[in-house]
Length: 284
Image (cartoon, rainbow, N blue to C red; front, side, top):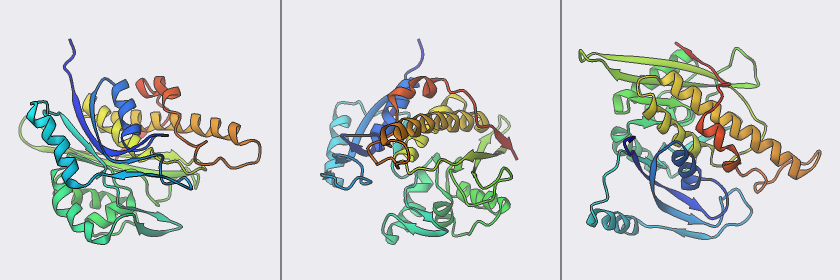
């Protein structure tokens, strides 16, 4: 009998669509994980729509939920998956912008990142956390070393402005993983992936990426190349299916709306479970 692996996922929740816990729970269950989901936010839909309604749990309410688990002695977890992946900001047209108040940055640097095993920042977030700018692959690798020194053994910069040798239709993602050898020494595996861009704005992709990376690094603990290839390939299949369906629903020549661009998660079950590898990672 396969050993049970249990994840506590503390994220937002939406009634309609796939972001936060809705984006993370299904793929993790499909990949064999038991999930306990704490909904830090409960909205009708994600905020990319024109309207949304709902509630945000305060720290006391979140603590109360965890206390209930603790009192029943069911609070033992292999992993905790949170929105601090870290979700801080991104770049638009070359300019960085934060999603969260700037006074939270020291909290991420000093409290959150040091206790994380895996972090998946974009380039802008990696620069904020490290205090360094990235203009080249070498500088990106140096930034990942800074982030390793802060605590996490696995760092994946999920997107960057760095030019891809395959052209402007591709973006570069970079990964770095520290592993401890039996003799006590530390090795570092570094990878680069050239990912084809999709001309659409999706919501929930970061949550899906973090969940699947957690799953595949668990299944391939010392092989970041394979874990990232499976994660990114599954993402590719989900997004391609989503954009194809959305364009059909929108009609010829019309841009899909947020409802039509909701991730086709259930329809992609087989691709999540056993992804055909369509994106190869290069070991650096």
